[in-house]
Length: 366
Image 1: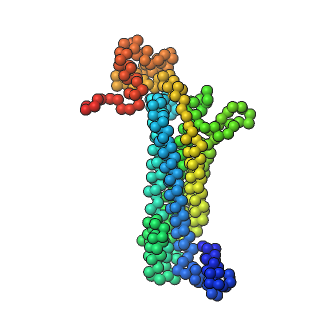
Image 2: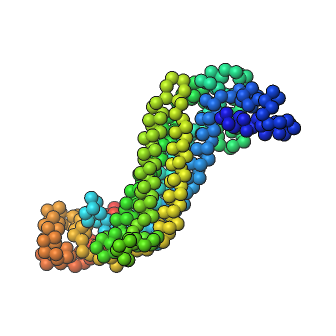
Image 3: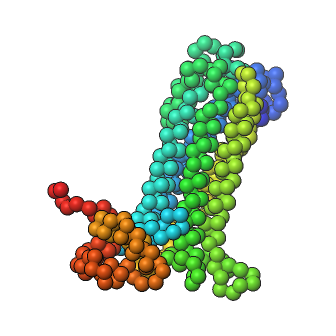
């Protein structure tokens, strides 16, 4: 704040035709800092910076969500096996999986946006501790109104300037939703790495664009380096949330003197996440391709499809079929058919991919 006051004062002196440093004419504290204190100007400036930069972050989140949505449409007809606890569950489409990731990111961006109103209440005009010492009684409201007009950010004067000067909960809330976003993003990258594992001894359901040679010793190896980079950014952002929380907790009485680390970490989190998501979108998601044959083969080989027979056979019989299929390696379809429990038509209908990827009980109008 003092550096800004000095720069403004010396530039003003130049414009007045005076020498820089001629503070008898115009002083950084007496004149430029009139009705102000670092304790209200600094947090207000930080809030403006966060509001603007977080807006750009949300724009990048939306672009990444849209990229996953486009892949969802592209892969909408590709049947694959859904998994829970890394075990075969029930079929779904690869498009449903990608679409869900897009929804997760979009909803995360909405949560970040909902945290921004806490940054729009300023303590500007409260000066040292919020009492407004050395200001005109009309100053605080007028300066905030003018700032709101110039920025268009919907700013308002806090109801209690003493409380606003010492409280940093708006920053804590923002750090928390950044952590939430980082967790979601990292989980998606974990999934991308897992689904692309292989190429022959892993899941191998999708292909990530090759960014660089994967190994100095293993020729032909391609590593999922872009998702791994994003994972590491997420780890950093998650840690920054803890730093912000500790800095907020360490404030004492009428002022929190640890706002510099809060500012550094929040602005760093925005910068890192925005760049990471742009990199993930442009150098990974946009170029993902599907191995449709592998996805379909996994469905055909899985005993998880037996779940679709529950409404027809009941839990006990389907459990028997699942165990037999696992023990013998034979298809579920054949085991049920040879026992006469269902007809071919019933099995074809129950085990059709279209029936297994959406609610299938009842009929229209029931």
